Image 1 (cartoon, helix red, strand yellow):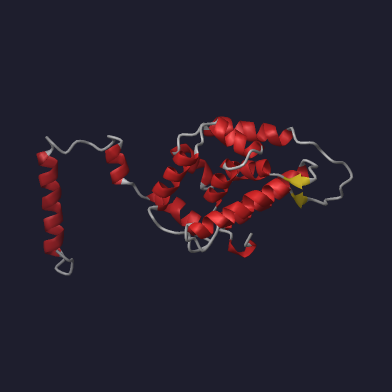
Image 2 (cartoon, rainbow, N blue to C red; image 1 turned 180 degrees about the horizontal axis):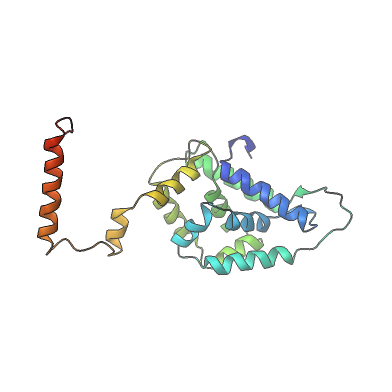
Length: 206
């Protein structure tokens, strides 16, 4: 795992997962710790991505919390905590997926894909709450728009784009755009306003 090539969001989620395991007196950081951290992450990319894929996100969050609570505790560990073999496998597979996809940095959405390929608790929870590999890949492709992850802030940049812009193509596909037919007056007025602005500002490219 190329730890120096994690996106900011994945670095933060891993730190949160370790803190979660430590606070619960767990001896190992498991994939379900990381799954819970990704789902609870403020401004994180995973929750909206899973919603886009059609998953039961609310149910998944509660199930992940319950799975973390059910893990065995170890008293007197003195803060000594390690990554479990299952989590190391997930992270290594995530690194492999990133390289196969041409990404320079390893993003959190690929962690979800890697979890789906395992039979540990995290993978089972994802599958039982409506997450499929095909659906998740489709959601990732939709969010990325064909772009690779080439910097550590890539996930935050995508979140900002989704927050402050409107995808007109997506809204049209969902039938959420107002009809244009029958609105000739509004269209004519819009054109007139644009023409006036162009006339009053000769420097504007026509």
